[in-house]
Image (cartoon, rainbow, N blue to C red):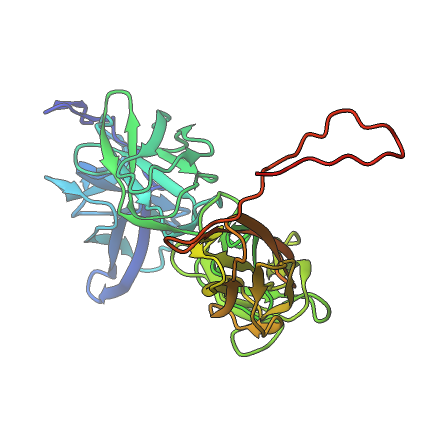
Length: 477
């Protein structure tokens, strides 16, 4: 019997290790000595360590002889009936060192009996299991690549080991796992602290919420050296939402392309962008609407690494508001883009404004150009230009069209016959959206030629009180 402490390692007393050591029998053979009528039988016995810890020397094979019909001896064996430590025959195939887990050792046994004696036997392994103290943790099953928000599979396991990396099957320590390397600032959820069972802590429901490459987990337990897992990646889950993030609301003139592309983002249920998802954009098929590239009312786009899908859209010729929907498989609520087609309209500008002739000699005439410009997005139709009377005039044409961005000149004349100021108002009628009736002031001043008498009437003549039905006169100088 061996029991003691060696370098912090404890050896249990030798016990029957049949549950932890496999015994196999081979090469059983017998020979008969014809002179002595004695039979010698031998066999090869193999002991294999099926335990998770080493078996320390000495490892004995203890022989039990069953139902003999006569005397049976074992001349090569140790001990024997009535002899300690087993009061039976035994062999010592492992006299020094240790038998590691999975390792085997073979020895031979010999039986001697008289001819006619029968028996059976069995071999029981007796020894001392190396009992050590837990010193460290190690990942048994490392985390594999997983989907955000879903349990890491297969379940992560952490083993409690001694300093020689042997499993400690009796350990029940509480083991905690946390994020080691955290490339995407993710959060670890699930049961992160569990008690080991038979030296193994199993984590069946760990999840990470953020997509990222190169995550690691760290396992720790009080009094034990921690362990780091292999690196693993977390990818996005299935599409859970689609949102319009650009291009809504907006408007454009009919038959023109919207200035901002329609952009939708697809995310999983952990709010991670989903790449490679097919997004279908659909516009109304009649009335105010438009078309995608290629002229169709529906199209598809694939999300990029940021989860974005984008398309260009062109308004049709019908003015009004409408929605374009973006959908993705697995998501019931579409992304909606609110769009408006606006009718293009002309706009008018007239310069100079006001129009001033300044001083003009009486009984002469002059003219100035009036420039009419279309600053809108459709053809300007000027239907009439009027409103002036002598001494002003408008030279034809007084009705015409002006293309978008173009200008047209109309000449305005001034021919004073009397000295003094003259004013008038030009009325321009058109289809302009900003000023369908544009009023423009015109002024000029008639002056007498140098050295000529000037007839200048007073601004007002005061007759004083006059009886109704009578005439009154007054001299004017």
